[in-house]
Image 1 (tube, one colour):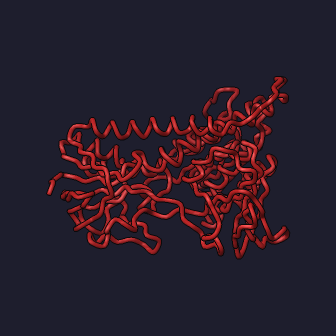
Image 2 (spheres, rainbow, N blue to C red):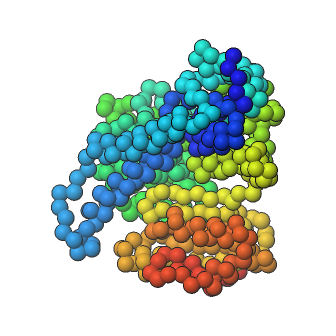
Image 3 (cartoon, rainbow, N blue to C red):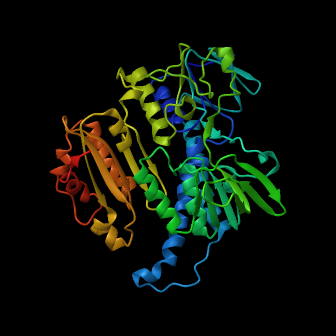
Length: 456
């Protein structure tokens, strides 16, 4: 049995960085990866999808060239070249993660499926490893929604859709949240007809109603058909077509297309790790339960990234690494509960989000102020010809601390960080309001917006 100071299972956004920190602290570390180095983000998530978003944006802008006084003709999409570009970007990053770990002194890389044999022992292939510390970073995968007839219908998920080398004639997307929204716009811009099917009354239902409405308007303006309140979903093959029964209120009950994408949630990769042999507790959905320092119920075992249910983003996974490393190696008591909710939706224009929604603030009953600005009043957006969306912010009336913000518009995915940083600093909103921002930018409208706060 090979003995180590630590075992890291999985090489997503938390595992490799933690392995390097542990090795740098003088520990011997075993790193186990069963498939692709870099996890979801590098291989089937952020990196490849944002490469596709970039290609889709280029096609969309080329078709709009005449609006800028530019003559362009014959705009087309070569799906094989788009795929090759995307795959090259992902492969380079995945290879970089792998080679980086192999070159790290003190790290030993194992390729294979890891399973617990006890709280301190893990098997991989025909070998057994032991360590007093085990860190689980196994990520998640697409969940399959309970749709009648789905077992008889070919369908795609966020991973398998990456294999397409031709543009679908008509893509049906089940799921109106982040994965579904991004792919819907990508393939619409590539030339597909697209129909989105969502069981909730709104797209991106966890957002405020005005944000959801703004997202829907952006997609519908580009020709994406949206069907909400889809109940009693059922799927079937009808010749060469795929038919999804939606029973949507006020719409046809069938959606007919050539391809079906399921984008209705994720599930953790914890069902085949042998967690029961280690005594590691999971919740009803299979997520590993952890405390505020990401420790499991078993001493010496931590869970980081998507598998712990405490965040579903690359940045939350990396922050998990930072929290564990700070507590374990630096004597710095960092906690999951210290972080502020923050994420982006990478449709075009994007949505940047930080903190509480307006709905959540209203529900709390606390005295608050809010303000908003349409992107039509942002000079930079007007000059770029990208004026869809708006920005809004909510602050605590008594403490003057920023409670939350949403920026749906060009540059919103970057501008949101100026607000987020002030929130982490626990500084009053007046710090931004009195700042002199550069013109012409999207950011310069944030101080102006804060100057017009009114009671919520």
